[in-house]
Amino acid sequence: MTEHRLFAMPFAAVYPAYVNKVVRKGRAQAELDQVICWLTGYDPVGLQARLQDRSDIRSFFAGAPALHPNRALITGTVCGVRVETVQDPLMQQIRQLDKLVDELAKGRPMDKILRR
Image (cartoon, rainbow, N blue to C red):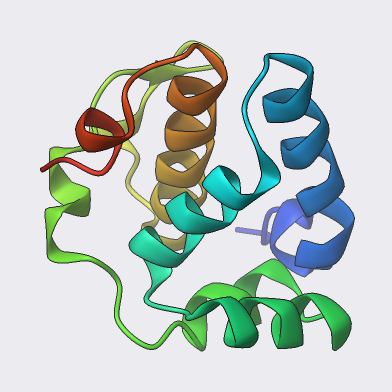
């Protein structure tokens, strides 16, 4: 089976789309960064370093300091796919991030997005 082409894309190429989506809906880039850091364990400096070194998405998630243990609580659909049923671990992490970004853009409170 061939690898999904998304895995080789630089995370820095996807990040501006996330920023545009949340800013267009009235949220701040800092909130997006907070969500990404919560999921991956990167601190803001580490996140910026990964954006600058143009790590691919596979490396971005593989190098994540500590994926949050509550990420299993992220459920729902993204593009018609149930996040919790995705078999490939990397694709599931990508879908979890997509779901968090969707929730942020829809105005959901940060406490609920971060599964507190």
